Image (cartoon, rainbow, N blue to C red; front, side, top):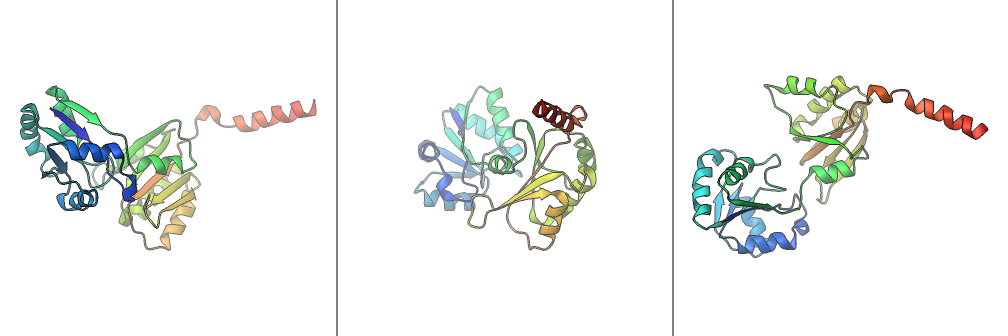
Amino acid sequence: MKLYLVPTPIGNLDDITLRAVSVLKSVDVILAEDTRTSGVLLKHLAISKPLQSYHIFNEHQTVQRLIEQMKAGKTFALISDAGTPGISDPGFLLVRACVQHDVTVECLPGATAFVPALVNSGLPTDRFTFEGFLPHKKGRQTRLAELADEERTMVFYESPHRLLKTLGQFAELFGADRPASVSRELTKLYEENRRGPLSELIAYFGEKTIKGELVICVQGKEPEKNKGRRNKYADETDEEADD
């Protein structure tokens, strides 16, 4: 009576862990966001297990049935098309239901896009906020306004056809000189990590045909208490040097 959350590669198939393979081979049923996509991965891993569809369009209708099957003794693994289930992918509703019904949930560590994008961005990583996908229409401006004073590094997912629009909105809201990075096609053959002020990123990607999954990292607003501190410290250092 257990649900495993199993991360799958976001591009490079070698990023699957030995433990993930072992768990997928041991469970009774694998829940997949897209059974066709997951079927390719499972075939590559020589794993043959019953696949059931579990995605954003059917998760509300299937949760109770899955809970009943798990309480009857079945063990399930939940995978998404790529990355860790529940991170901008279906999973939350099922995990919450398992917790409410005392079904054990175990999440394996593994691939997810925002961690490598954040770490290699060159932006502060000690404190950050993961925003996922911004609302497309309703609520978008409200959410952007709420982020205007955010001091932590902000991490977003974005699609290729919305990248320039989103970068433009960030430049308008945060300032065109705000440091940021865009990571594209992480772990894949044509991986690209571009860093610089928002204005430079807009100019660069404005001249390209943009493809692949994207992660945007934006430096947070400098706290008011820190403004001018750098020059003060520099002056003190200079005085100490003179002494």
